[in-house]
Length: 458
Image 1: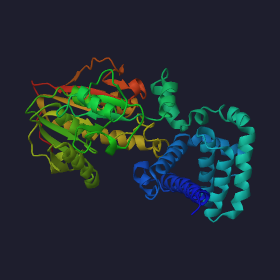
Image 2: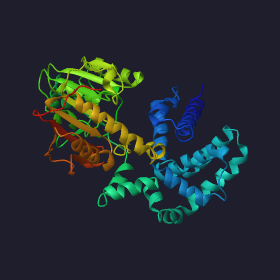
Image 3: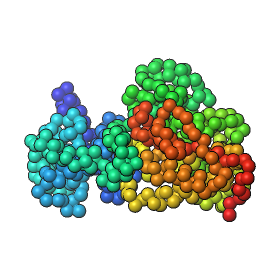
Image 4: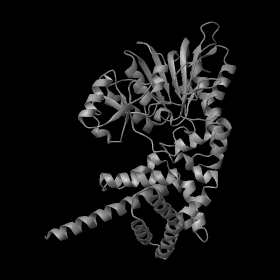
């Protein structure tokens, strides 16, 4: 075969792979925005036959559209003569993909337009080809004026649902714009060094040998931020349990528990097991119990424990009703890693903007209250309970602690005096982006040893 023919064939194959990346991205977006699946579940639709760089392109497109959905929809509303029919939502998603690529990526304008037109035909909607071409060329021609017009609206400019902006502005009036901006950033990749197995300095040297550059966290000694993300299999010693992937803010939980060897520790709502494993890394001889409602999610906890070489009692049970699984023995330390709105980790899970609804908050706060109440009854007098959420909404955080303190006379707050976060009425709040970490809330409580109530659960 002549060199020119080989080159042409390679070029054609590369073009098909890029097209496959866009088709995969469209499938994932349909699963999230039409079928309501989480991005974590839907990302499996990315074509397994794609090269690594094309899978990366597909996820960049998916994350970008979900991150900027509300702004992209506002742009389309100005570009379309009339709204598309519900059955043609795939064409709307195709246009959003193309608009994001035109705005944020380095793909030449003509290539984006040509591929979008071709993709509309591959979807079996030839009628849309001319419209897609006209809409995208209209955007390229008038992009500056369109941006100025769209950005007059705060929800479009910040690309968040209006109800969430209102809640954030109520709870954090001085910080709201910073929160919204941080939510729209690409998240860094953080590592947690297993200091039970290797010193941080030694692991950093192993990374340097692999030409992987990192920055250290100013507070959490085992937290390392990669300058650029890598595949976990490329991390030295990952499969041998030397390191895990975990956001730096989440890594603060283990230290706040003031762990001592031999303590009985309970991790409520343990999946996927990052904090469970970090607790076991932090002190020897712990008697660990991890509770999770969903069996499939508990499998992830077990996988993490096995990789790191730890053991724990794994209980598939309902954290809101412990009577079916608790044996009556109290715990020295309890971590309540409560289910929440996840409004502190939007930059890492941009689908939250679309899937989370304001109506969800009432059920979530009631679940949190029930879990706290059940956990408190299982805590030994003198023991510590750490309440953690990845939310930035006060109704899920300090208001829950205020309610618990009001309901239990034997509960006392242990003030978290730290060089990070914001001191709240109760507990401490990390907002998204502080020290390049996610948004988390922490509150620490101690059960008083005098006049404690009966710990039995009815």
